[in-house]
Image (cartoon, rainbow, N blue to C red; front, top):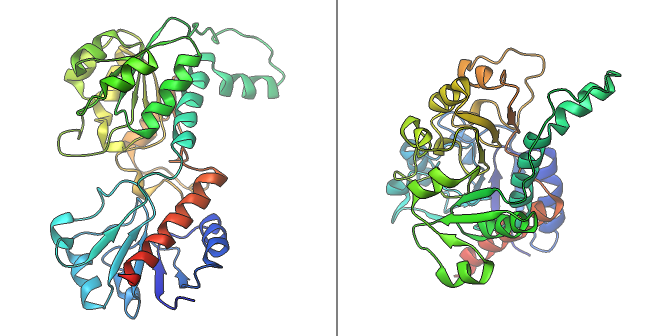
Length: 324
């Protein structure tokens, strides 16, 4: 049994349940903190070998310096993205591991759910019928069959979504910095330039990592190249989209619908309960007023299988590090 001590930040009950179950075969000593890791909470890491963090934890240069000072040997991300980690600070100073793939099916299926919901207004139909209103006015959708979907980022998640959308009979075009033409031929899709994808797509779904090159890739300039009435889906990272530009596109009718599982300033709100509070973020509050916008709280990954895979991979990463 391994006795290494793990400080687990931004812990929810479902995290504890999944990690405690998987940890039965590892035997790590896990201490759960509901707080996010940041400059104020890094003091709690003293005496721990590992910190386990999620997407809204802050691992900047000051936090990294304190982690090293406190004797932490490993930063274990229980997510795929690492844009919240200061890579320059950790380089040659402290090791970082992550979960590159926990369930591409979960995220791709959620993207498809957003597309179907926005197109057929099932979320609004549910509320209307619950109120005894059986009118279908305002619920007009389109056949997805024959429409064009553009997938930006063709990794495991993007490929899963391709299979789903091809099942609807959609024409699917792809963009990736490293195009896999063998896959494209096999799947009946094709790689195109980003500009061409913007011009031809009825639906655009983002599945690329957040990098300096992809930051605000959806902006006023790129939106101007898109079809009138385009649907934009983002289950990747919030900062792929300039939200102010998105709102302008929605106001002008250029963007017909938006399905967002992520938001560029989400760390204050997502995964938390603000049902009895005011939303102080004016941009998020404005976004949520649009009838053709569907916001979910970074839940695309949230399936039983994914949680189990996250726990398994994270604890295996920790085990592998301390066995070296």
